Image (tube, rainbow, N blue to C red; front, side, top):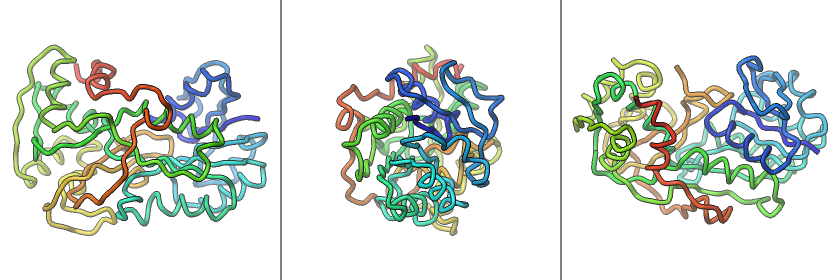
Length: 312
């Protein structure tokens, strides 16, 4: 029986594909742009769109477990097709914002659709993705060795996307993860100042750091363009998870608002992978990759070295 990975070309999905191949699984990659995919040669690539369920049956045939990228549109139809095809378990790439109670419109409905189906399920709920740094800071680091940010000394626990993939792959292959929801974090608490220092060490050059007020940061990243501009209001506390206008006050909780900021193939908008919001952090039982797979959890310094070319 095969394993189907939706969002197979994204930051997490491509690592999941690699882990499954290494484990000797029959892997299928679902993408809207098969010509842009470059998986290992033994992976079968299927063109499909989660918003168009009629495109999915060929990819679902003979599939036992499936990684579902959280696209809310038509999710009930997608899950019904999976059940009809004989899929036994769906692993949802979700968000710790569901656990925190902030996400009721993006990842949560996808989780609920899977649970209602009667299929086995596992929810993988990362908090702050380390790849935040890439989509927010890399343009100014590359252009002028400069980082502009707020609250530089507020700690977080950013997680390497490869750690998320390790957990998702384990959940796809091992029945013991059925019925579990995993809130994932990185192995160490780091401030933004610490993260910037790790990037500087990785590229071997000093970085100029400017701590500014939220209003100034919002304008800076709006001017930067791309993902940062599209998400600046949310990033700096002027918009809540549902898109309502807010004041930038409170503590920081990093979450992944993928449906609001990613394509279904897992890329960032022109990211979703993790954003920050000025929320009061609830009491969440955070786990690392090690707690679930037994393997080593990757540090932020490792993440910076893995992405060093993206910052140069």
